[in-house]
Length: 602
Image (cartoon, rainbow, N blue to C red; front, top):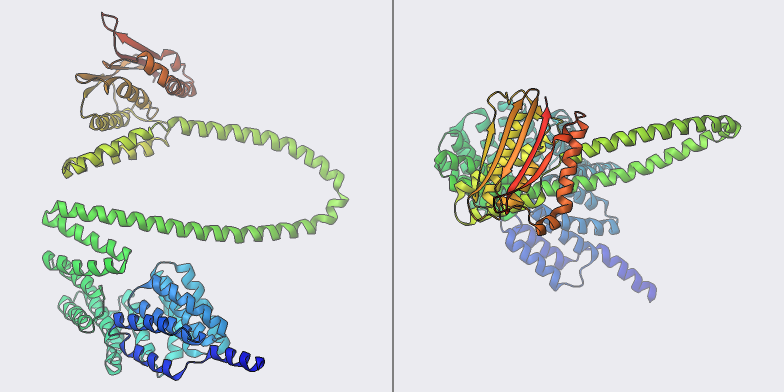
């Protein structure tokens, strides 16, 4: 009895019962024309049939993954197919394993994970050759074609599509032949051989009509439309793209490609209103399907149309959304590359360890014989190594110190400026906000560009500090004014100075003096030439540095001053001796500002 029960339990795992087959047939009949109803019925079948066999469960997941893939829900398709693939592996069903691998490769390719896509495609190819299944082998070749086509490696793509052609030339699988014709046409299109591309698409179209595959036919019509756009035949392009859109609508298929193509077409014909209408239709579909990269592309087009139409508010709205999407795409791509790099690093590390161990083993014999000689050589090498390491460390420390000395941008300033810009935006003044964003981004860019340089021209230094002071004026609602006076005898384009030399003292003047002054604040920078020296004077009429402020900022002040002097010392011209930081007082002996003075030798 136990053996019989065990046999019945095991055999139940690899069968599909007649009543479930009938339900599979029902699902197949509505899969492409009524996808929403398909998903509802499939989920209901799983929930209401707790006694499904492993094979039945695997096949249901496989069918669901296929329809998710055909409806462009690639991440959901991946998650579903991974579950079905695991079940097929347990059942040792090689054929359906291969089918899952093909779809997984395609789905990963669509989400941009090319490495994983290639792994699954090659795995499917190996499995197909192992079991001798020409159909899956051809599909694996076709998937490798798609991969190399996306990488724009058209020679490899042509090789794989030719291999696919040799396997499917005598096939009765019309759907696969249609796909093959489409892929051939895609290669010809990239090679600008439009007639060959159109002929291949035409053959695929006739096959899809005879097969009565409306969704595939809609895709082919769309491809023909894009081909005519490339060929410059706009009337033909519009006819086929509208045909694709109409057919998709009739079969209730969700596809943004025809609308995107019509948008491109009307934009080329300078019909911006019609282009915008079609781009918005495509955008709504991309947003619903979470196709972020396609959404970014469409928003770029809408931004261009809005600018051409003079609707800058609409352009700015689209630009804000587009930039947010691009940041997310960049973040995801960075994480993906980081994970891939970590995996490669671990593999490489293991290979290195193995090679290192082999090398040690091969050297053991002669190491034992020449121990004394090696000891002497090692001692000499150690002396040179230690000496060289100290030199390298000192040099590295010096370079690092130089880099750190030049990094002067205060994070609090950045955050406060962003907050000020945000307030302007919330007040409903996009033009003013846009101007300050441009000014602030220029300042950040200048900081990044100049911090890597040993010296810059004086006019660039003046431009940067002007930009910095004006940004500070934004933060504090213009409670102070500033003046920069440069001696007429100075050619600011030819004189070189260390970058960002003045900024710390300008920052101190604003932060500790002028921002606390309710009105009438003034900041003055004078640059004069005396013989072969430049004289710099920074004056402010702020509230002065009170005893409390001195106590609170003593460490930071000394740090800024010491860094400044250290930079001058590195020039080895004795300029640090000219530095003066002086508190100013009025006739009543009350603080009336601060003065900074120093000289640079030309």
